[in-house]
Structure formats: structure tokens, C-alpha cells
Amino acid sequence: MVDLVLRSRRVLTGDDERPAAVAITGEKIVAVVGYQDPVEAGAEHDLGDTALLPGLVDTHVHVNEPGRTEWEGFATATRAAAAGGVTTIIDMPLNSLPPTVDAGALRVKQRAATGQIHIDVGFWGGVVPGNAGELTALHDAGVFGFKAFLADSGVPEFPPVSPAELTAALTAVDALFVVHAEDPAHLVTPAASTAYADFLASRPAAAEHAAIATAIDASRATGRRVHILHLSAAAALPLISAARAEGVRVTAETCPHYLTLDARHIPDGATEYKCCPPIRDAANADALWRALADGLITCVVSDHSPCTPELKRRDTGDFAAAWGGIASVQLGLPVIWTAARERGHRLGDVVEWMARRPADLVGLPAKGRIAPGADADLVAFDPEATFTVDPRRLHHRHPVTPYAGKVLHGVVRATWLRGRSVTAEEAGGRLLTREG
Ligand SMILES: [Zn+2]
Image (cartoon, rainbow, N blue to C red):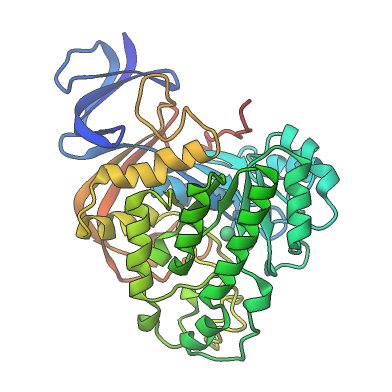
């Protein structure tokens, strides 16, 4: 006798898809059996042709609470995530106040999240100049690894580190390091302009290439794992490929906007498209898709990074002054599925990129998969249904999105977190800490 059985003709187990029934007791999946197999259960739902996916794991989300809660907060971000089929997020260490750069700051963040999260939430720590001595205690307190910037982060309380400081941090603690890889020597301060091309020219691919080389050097020198965040410049792919071939422990992620948006089609003044590194052209996106297909890019995460509409400067449309960040935690799954299916990928590929591999990146073996022993984090997803993106239906605090009006494939019908249906009312999420 189990608590719940979910049946579907399209259950995503591993990277493969088959008719199956998923049996759940308490918070866990206890068995995956044939679609028609009899199972004694307290409750049962047959989803028919609606697919059953593992809940997505988004390891790159900026919640901004406490301190900049007017930009985004735990309640709104996690409600948006659940509506988008995401059941685990790992929150970035900057834009909140304090930034997560010591164990005390982590406790402040955990307290702020308590009682208002609708999905499970873990935290990254941060590397800033002068905090190398804090890293071990912060790691022991449960962060999943450490983020560093090599260029200005956009907020004064989270300054970048030099290549020497990055190497010193890697030496200080045996942890996973995630790097915002743009080299300040290749960035120029853009003049005020409503033309996207002017902003794009201020952050060339060479900036990513140079910073990724720095990160690879630091990994090679110390033997630590380094993960390149939000890779935009396909020109840097051969560098990552060569380092991996040499045995350097480097991985990379990219984001829905780099894979699906085209710099040449960004309208004047449309600052909802501004992020750093920038969205580049369609040929660049094609190369990122090839790297994803080859496994050189291991995962796709949102880099959900909202702010207030005022800071997005929609009044002037000035790309130079606007905050850089795209809010997309609710839309990543349909955005990627829509583009992936057109390119001949299967739904199983999307689950691999957006659930299993991000879970593996941060060491969460019970997340991101449908298998006995895994957490019963599940999503009913109709891959054939379409919808038009209506900003009013987004749950994040400010409904600013470059995807407004786009027609997307794939509708999230329901989300379960550890065996329970996720609702807008009940904050059933849990704080996650690094295992082991
Ligand atoms: Zn980010």
C-alpha cells in the first residue's frame, strides 16, 4: 500500500520516456512500475498523454531577499518557480543584503526564507576580496559552493576578485567554485544608447574568452572544480573543450536567453533583454546548441535576476543605465522545450539539461530524477499544448520579460514537491544544505 500513484504514458525516467506508474510513499518515490500495473494506493491520478517529469533543478537564481526584496523575494520567486515546473533552486550570494559571504550572512538568508518558500531552496556562498578566511566555515554551514566575479558584479557590496585572489580562494577550501567569467580588461563602459548593438559591443566575446582562460588556469593550478556560469560566447567553447581533454575539472552552463534570442532582433530600448554577458547573434546560439548536444555545455539554468521596472529603465530605454538581468524562472522549461523540439531534441534531453545534470552539479542525488529513492518532486507537463506568454500570469514580483507575446510549446499542469501538490497558499519548501 502506497500513498499516491501517478500514471502517465510519458514518464521521463533517465533520458528515456515510457508509459509507467510512479508510486510514492511519504516524500519519496518508492517504485516505478508498468503503466497498467495494479498498485494499492491511497490516491491515484492517470495523466494520460500528459508527461510526468522530475521537478527541474535551477542552480542559478537571484532571490534578492533580504535587502532588495522590492526586486524579488522568496515567496514570489518560489511560486514562479513552481508554476514553471522548478522544484529546487540554489540562490546566488549577491544582490541580497547582506551578501552570502560568511556563515552569519547565510543564517540571515535562511531565516528570511523560512516559512515562505513553496519549493526547496539551497544557497551558494560568495568569494569577495578579503573573505578567504570565512570560506571553510561557510562551506561547513551548508552552502553548495562559491561564486566569484572577475568583473564588476553590478552591486558595490560584492566586488570582483583578481586572478590571484581567485586562486587563493580555490586553495582555501575544497569546494565547487562557480565563476561569472567576463574579464574587465576587455569591457568598455557603454555610452547612453537605446540601441542594443552599442551595449553588445561593450561586452565582446573576448571578455568571456579571457576570463574563462583565467578560471581554467586557477582550476588547473589547484585541482578544484570550476563551473563557468551563464556561458554566452560560443568562441570560448574550444578553450573549455581543450581544458577538459587535458583533465581540468571545468564544466559550463548556459541559459534560455542565450539559446533562443537573437541580438539582431532586439528592439530599440527593449531593456528587458539586457543581461551580462549579453545575448549574441543566432549563429552564436547555434554553436551553443551544438555544444549542449555534445555534452560540452552540461546544463541549462535560468539566471533569474529581476529588479524593479524603474531600474530596468523602460522609461528611457537606455541600455547603459538599465540593470542587467532577465527574469525567467517560470518560463525556462517551455522556452527551451519549444526551441529544442524544433531542433529535433527529445523531451528527455531537456530533462537531462534542466533537472538531472544541475542536481548532479551541486550533489543532490535525490533531486532531478524519477527513480526509486528519489524525492517525489514531479511535474505534469503537456508538451503538445501551446500558450502565449502573458506577463500578467507571471508570479515573480515584477512581470518584466523579453518573452512577452511569444507562443510557446509546453504547459505545466501541476507540480508536486516531496509527494505533496504545490499550491500558492502553502509554503511547503525546505531549506537545503550541501550533503556530505
Ligand atoms: Zn546570475
